[in-house]
Amino acid sequence: MTEWALIISCGLITFLTRFSMVALLKKEMFNDRVREVLSYVPTAIFPAIIFPAIFLDNSGSILIEDNPKILAAIIATGIGIFTRNIIATIFSGLASYWFLIFVV
Amino acid sequence: MKTNLQVFCKGIVDVSPFMIPVVPFGLIFGILAIDIGFSPLATMGMSLIIFGGASQIVLIQLFSGGASSLIIISSVGAVNSRHLLYGAVISEHVSDLKLIWKIIISYFLIDQAFALSNQYFKKNQDKNKYFHLIGGGVTCWVIWQSSTALGIILGESIPEKLGLSFAVPLTFLALLVNDFRKITNVIVMITSGLVATLGYDYIPYKAYVIVAALAGLCVALILTKNKKNYD
Image (cartoon, rainbow over all chains, first blue to last red; front, side, top):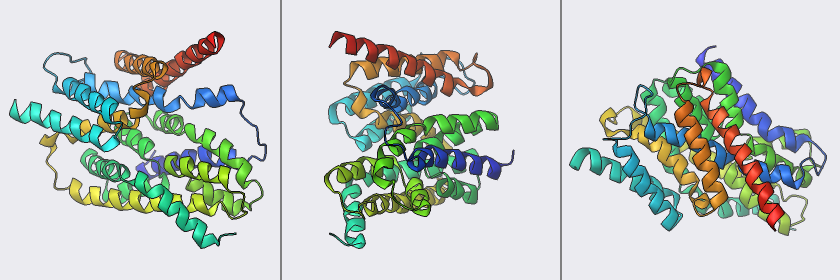
């Protein structure tokens, strides 16, 4: 599949996730239980991107020792819990990562 | 009744404070896409065609890891499956509109616009209330496209040594800041994260994002069921 075919397919499926339910006339397509579980989708999916990006090295092996990303992510999480601020979380993590790799 | 333009502008005003985090997110997307090897045109094309930040980052992340098209498309679909919920909630407010308006509204049905317009729809019953969502959506669209473009420009001059790819997990971490204090959400997050990390090498076709997300959702299903029983 070419790069553009891939981009268009991804665009199409994204549009369908938005459009399919809007287009349906039925008001109560989902019951409360389905709504509740769907509300956990971001919580369930984002860590699947976060954890491997922190704990795995470039070759895909688990790297715990000598891995500045772990400490930087812990600091960012702490700032996130404390401030609930998206920008503060991102930049505290990046700043501590740069501090650990360039200064320490 | 307010004019269409007034409702549209109300949407812009309401969504604006929530646009601040979109800027670094768009910048990071643009920078990383260029870094991975996408052309400026393809990078801009992703923001224009897909118009969904998290799923675009998943796309380039999996693409650079060598995942197949099928896995990439289904992972993008999985990340965006939360929009099914938004659509279901919004549908009752737009059920009388023409198809073309439903298509336009669907394109702009993004997290921030949904959250704020849903609140507005609950308080206002005017026929033209949907202009609120379009106002919020268009605002986010302009911010997302321009920050992507700026990221593309910066991407060509930012050294790889800065390790900006670390901004990806940080950005997603930041999107979960409201979850950190809820124990159910924390358990779901850890389950998904562990399955993805430990299964990275063993789950075939780079399907670890989908498998981990399903594992997390199963845990959410069990935990929220038990919670109901105790209440």
